[in-house]
Structures are given as structure tokens and as C-alpha cells.
Image (cartoon, rainbow over all chains, first blue to last red):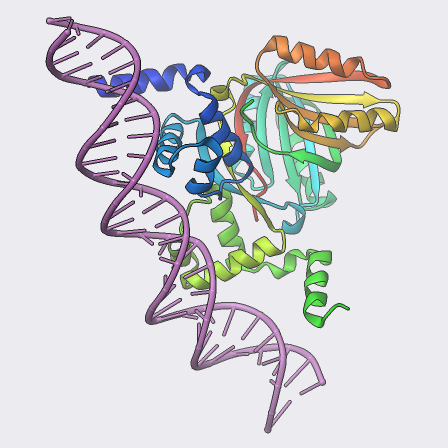
Length: 166
Length: 166
DNA sequence: ACTATTGCCGAACGCTGTTCGGATATCAAT
DNA sequence: ATTGATATCCGAACAGCGTTCGGCAATAGT
């Protein structure tokens, strides 16, 4: 039996209303989206609050899923992944789409989205070199129900970040 | 006059050789890429080292630029950005390409890459709604030298992360 | 053989994250 | 109006972690 406390939590999670983020929340989120190593005392000077108050807000933002996590941003090139490519894959069946989603556990695959159009899937893949990209492409093209694959090979990257508030 | 110490640093930064990352470094990087809030003592148990040893390695990885930073991952939908779209923009001049790069300071724009092809630019944009996306598209199409814009509107996202080691 | 460098550890310090109690304001229900 | 519940904030205090330090062992270079 759900208590009233869990009810409010469920409601909060269900509606995920952007309106319950005030200007202070957005300032905190913007700061943490750029650099999550900032201390609470630093943040407190930015938003004119005490450190525990900022802590409470960050805790709430994490609980509500606005902050999904804190991660280290790695340099793909220095890891040996020099070849960034976006693939737009046109599939003829839902089974083929599902097969593509199984590539999520490959470390070279960074993003998988279904996009509008006739069963299209967009994949962002950072391969080590042309050879491993070729192998990856052949693996996809050999899938049942894959009609075509368009490749957009990145030459240089000028911006790469996550969602920002305002 | 550069000392021998700065020389070795310069060499290290110039070649950015993936070979100087051993298995321990990769374990640390993999852990921090998923969750950068892990404490050094947690990491030390993973890689069978002491906490200060892990600290030294992380410090080195940051100095060498392998770890570019630590950021909070935000939920775009809960920020009000419900419409993720990838644009492939075909431009006829280098000036048009440069004009597109100036969109980097827009908060809705998350990625900008030049891609292989006749002056193509790929832009990842997370707009609030269809109306603001339409405004954004019209702004781009009205640029001098923009030949065509292909839009891939994301329906659902199954994976979204940064580069991983191995 | 000698020195410099690197990588690691244990111990200790100082800062920061975190918690706690209490104060204030808002709102709902009575 | 009064009461009670909730939310937000603060100052203070504690505990835990990041960070530094000295020293040791192994390695590479001269």
C-alpha cells in the first residue's frame, strides 16, 4: 500500500515539470553541467545561498532525475578513437531496429536514437580507425532488414556537450 | 629556455599516445566515465592500489588531457527540451560553414561537427518544442550559402554517453 | 656504479560534503 | 484565526574524503 509520501514522489517523477525549476536551480544546473567539481561553497556564492541550501537543492535535483549523474568527459582521440561517425540506418522491419539497439554494449557506440522516417536509426560511433569502422559497417549492413546506411564522417568537432538549462 | 622537464611534458602532450595508458588507467577511466562521484578509496579497491596512487594517476590523466573535465549529465526533457534533432547542413561556401559555427553559444545547440562531403556541417540541437525548432531551422536556411538542410528528428533515445576506454 | 625518475605506500592534515536542529514562510484544513 | 504539514533556509558541528608529504622500491639513463 503506497503512503501519501510515495504518492507525491510518484507524481513528481511522472509529470517532470520544468516549471518547478526556479532561476536558482537553473544557475546551479548550468554551473554543474560545465564543471561538476565545483564545491558547494563556490556554488553558494554564485546563487547567494548557504552551502547546505545548495546541497539540499542538488539533492532534490538528483532525486527528481534532473541531474542524471556525474561523469568524466574523456578525450576520444587520446583513447585511440580517432574516427567519429554518424550513421543513419534505414531499416525495413521492427526486428532490424531491435537488432540495432543491441549494439548499445559496444564501447565504440556512444549514441543510439530512433529517428522519424521509415524505421530509421541514428548511431553515433567513435571507432579506432578506418579499419574497425569498416568492420562495424559491414556488420550492420549484413543485418537482415537493413536497407541502407548513410555515413557522416566527422572531420573536426567544434562543440560537444550535454543539455543545458536556458 | 625549456628545461628537460617541460620537454617531456610537451612531448607527452604532442603525441597523445594511447599506449601510455595501461590497463589500470583504463579501468579508472572506465569507472569515472560512468560515475565520476566514486571516491578514491572505491577506485583503489577496483584497481588494487592505494588511494594516493589512484590520485596520482587521475592527476596525470587530467594533466595530459585524457580526462577533459567532470560534468553533470542533465535530463533534457525535464529541462523543457523535448525535441532532439540532428541537422545535416549542406553549404556552398566556407563562409557559410563559419557562420554555422557561431551557433555554438546557443544553449540548445549541443554538438557541431564538420563532416566529409561538400562543406557539410552536422548540428545536434535540443529545442524546447516544434515552434522553437522551426525558428531555428528558418534562421539556418536564411543564411547565405546554405544549400540544403536535412533533419533527423529523434523519437526515442536508447543510449547517450561519452567516449569509453576499450 | 651512481643518479634521476617513476610509481607506490602509510600517515597525517585540512577541507568539504553532509547532517542536524531550529527558524521562517506558505498553504490547507478545521 | 488556529493548527498542522511542508518547504526552504541558515549556522554549527561532525565525519569522511581529497590531498600532500616523506620514504621506499624498481627502473632507466649516464
